[in-house]
Length: 545
Ligand code: G16
Image 1 (spheres, protein in one colour):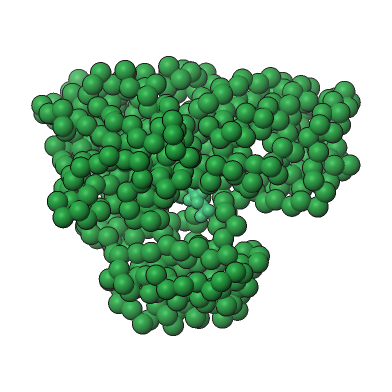
Image 2 (cartoon, rainbow, N blue to C red; image 1 turned 30 degrees about the vertical axis):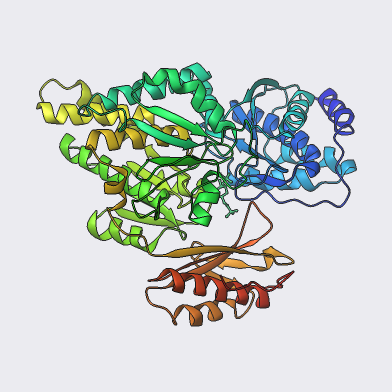
């Protein structure tokens, strides 16, 4: 044990912490300019090794800053079943990240003591990285941290974030969830896709065609790797594949969702079904332009609606009485919540932003569909739901309709990456549902109409001044801010607005919706001004849109 700590001291001097630098574990791990992250990566390697010793399981570390600009980077930690790192350990991560160099050993020993970790236990850590130029050296720093504590590592190199989550889950379920290889991932998902699309009536090549914006990131590379497994049942044109453009610049899921316009670099004709991934391929949004050139976005809310409708119909056909729910955040469009609750009559829950929160809420149901409006989400099936499905699929005394529904549900379970939101898996599921239902993207879009909405960012001197409650729907500080928002919202029809500090960027996010786009824009601007004035705005005052 003493030797490990000696190694930590030696190695950590090669990954020194800039004195005084303080970083918080945010919505999805640490995230900031890549130049400030070397010591964080080394220390997260140490932490992952400790977590592995504690859980006696493989832990994942993904080097990525997802939707952030190319010059940023970050790290996401993956727990044994492929879920996000548990909340108590987020606290340890922050402590370890911010401890000054000379106190590192004390901080480490403190975690070992608190968690009663047996240092003689073996550690195993899987590491992956996105396509950022800084990711190579930063993932090496993670590996250095793992090895300093005597841990074993497997370096997957370039993978999407959800692929790394998948590998961790496969490893810790001893292959029950699948093979912990890229080949295993592609074959599991694509076989399920081919099974599902057997139930679609003859489709033309046009109907099988999809345009994918890869955000100039890892997703484009991985879709290309997967393509041959799809046997032309899905014909993909990839744009923004990283060969020319800059990562996430004017493209990708975050750009398309926030700007409500198509990415640059995509060649789309009116009516073409298109989708965008984000920088680490854990988010997806769909869109098309109509014959008048109008842009139509089908975001995470529309995706959740499509998937939950499909699942609910199948559960009814299968005669399975399972509790299905949809989990959203405050960003969910009011029309989607209204449709889910009043027309589809499913349970709807609202949690704080961050898939870790949605994931936990979804675990409370037999079938939990969770999606953030930004396109980050998946579906969880409880163990007992999966067992009931299995029994039904094997039953010999049920009618053909029930049997068919059970088999379809089983393939649906297999196509879904239940560990975390996954753009590739979500894309395959959506494509399969549209094919089976014989539905066009326009018909999907017409399920309900979004309320016009607008998202803005405000720069303030310290975004932690803004504190929220009620799943981030109300601000409790600074004083007077919520009252100001309430007064502004009353000026508009069907209006709603909230503000919250981002956990991935140094900004305060503002969301507004109302019955017209002009009102949503005006409300978002007025609320931004209130944030700027009451929460210490920096730079120029926000301008009207
Ligand atoms: C991450 C999280 C998402 C969250 C997003 C924005 O996404 O995984 O759950 O919605 O950040 O968070 P915030 O508004 O706090 O900046 P990604 O795709 O960037 O990893």
